[in-house]
Image 1 (tube, one colour):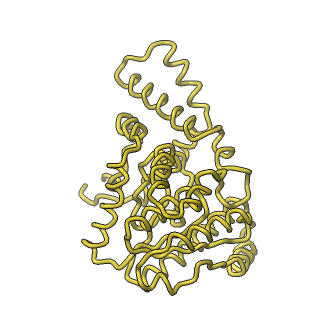
Image 2 (cartoon, helix red, strand yellow):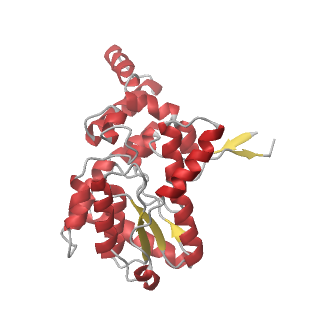
Length: 297
């Protein structure tokens, strides 16, 4: 019996595919292609709009600004919970306020929906059964937000937009059934390329300040576990993270081709000890999604 790979997700050992994804660079053509594909998806699927949760970080800010600038129907919400900092809350509210959609119903919906009291109640009930950890608490927060976004999407005849990108995808830095929605426009886009596209988009916006603030912000998971996402990933920048992965995948391809030299094998051992490469293998199950068994024996 075979286990079928989810559509669009490279196999774990498809080193060349991962390398090519990491080398995708920014361009005006890429920016337009993302927007055009999103618009076409709505039209072909006969959906009313995209639904987007705004955290105050670069990923959701970039997508909100892009949808707004291209007049693609969407609804967005700031969804703060107890662990979000005041700076994150302020950035998220500014993004939702200034990058609103012309989609009619979007104008009548609230900018901020704070479910901290609901989270505290659920967290308390769950913790009474099994002691909570920062990880389980963070997962619960992500899933609570996603429940709300799907409620809105179902009510409006829309679909939920994912905001994860390639760096998070490679390292499993997201919550299953919590961060991933129906459409993932930047899932296979390197974070450094996303930052570059966001900076290109700044020149097109009447009010670039909310997006600029998100670009300048220290990336965090909003859970208060550490001072930044990069700290949890054991790197100083996303450029460093992507460089580690590219080196590792190139060397693994050389190894598979029987072309590895002694110095290459020594470098591989070093890279395999890095936090991000270890996360790549430990979180492989998340990228594969739900396992589907092929019943043809």
